[in-house]
Length: 626
Image (cartoon, rainbow, N blue to C red; front, top):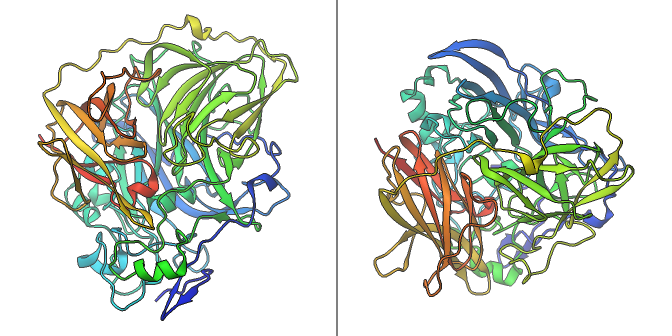
């Protein structure tokens, strides 16, 4: 039904297979430090509104396809997908503009899937190769076949999907949140396009359920969903991104991500204690800011400036003929992991930032699909870590190295006050260049490309810095979680095929003998905690890779880690893991223990945040019961 545009085929027997593809632009051929850092402005509200319980902040945020300056000026613009205010076309950007939220003041967002041609109203196909054999949204399956792994006939793999793209946005780290506002993977929706093929499902299974049962469901119109975020949590940096079933890796890679910052309340610090200001609504482009969000991602490109993502895992044709069979074990277009050859910060390759001789607050996010980051500053300047995923730490932590797994956030202060004017400092990445690589045991990022992140250029201070030195900060106190009501043992698993490698990753449970029981997305729900329960989760990682595990509508504290056979005593949390988190690195061959408190009742998910893993079965439902 949809042609394989731009996909070169290799024939073996009667089938054609997609060979391995590679970017036509090498990372080392992209000049560094030619573009200034893009600091995301503040997303404008649509209107003020009185909600169910009082005033709320109200937004209308759409997803559109745009062309943007990502590479240096020697290259063409890059086509990306962007969030922006539906009423302000100039706000569409990758990454999306920052949503500024206040503690306990709800935020209502009308999310709009506007992946349509601006003149014709016809849907836009995906920028990348969509594998229709995964357990995914599957709009062509219609109402009865949506949200499934479809069955195909014939001896050859199906063509890639070229139809309208499903989206649904998740606010990562929001807790508590109502189930209908969490961005459940089966609550996706297609754009309101003129040419949706007959018989296609236009919405996911749980979009229809939530539309019927939620308080805001009456406001949901074709191509939209209305979500409300309660902001009843400690001030912190969250982020919003796409979460559609089986296609998240591609939608996020296309550009669908942005920051969401919660401020205020008894667990925040008074204005002026920390470096600031942050960007404010209506700021001029040249406004001086000293609190800056930084989302770090890896990408690859083609020589024409377009984003590159592999079309397949590139098996030799003779092997592909054996394993790429309809309804067979190997997905023909899915890749197990992705590592790009260029580093982007806030949507630009290797940018620079002019910094004054003063302290800066950086809100760091690893927004990569797969890549683990280990950050250092080239002159040995330390990071002062003051917060993690779910708010402030008990006390500032000084370190020369930051390990950031996928979707993890760090709130850090860097003090440039004693650095000589004219100094150029590089933010370096010494993380592994292979997924699952262990620091000190695997090849590190290429020092000429992915081993560099961005550049700081130090200039003279233009005003006095009155913020508190980080070593003297007294951070807001918090009570640790109490005793657990239950212990839950879950497993992380991988399926391999000889000669091929990993074919899918799975979550599951642990049996009485201590062995893994892998489960698929649609197997019966096994994780059913009660609302407000505190549970001790033991993440038993039976794979050879580390996995960043994220629980929706929950916050937790890392307790310890221990080798799987428990032959050695448990190790305490890593430096900086003393606060509340929502994503944790579950190390290969180890048990990672976390103490979890769950938010509102309803249906949510927990999953690996390596997006390629999440999209191919490494995600399970989480039912929080009353």
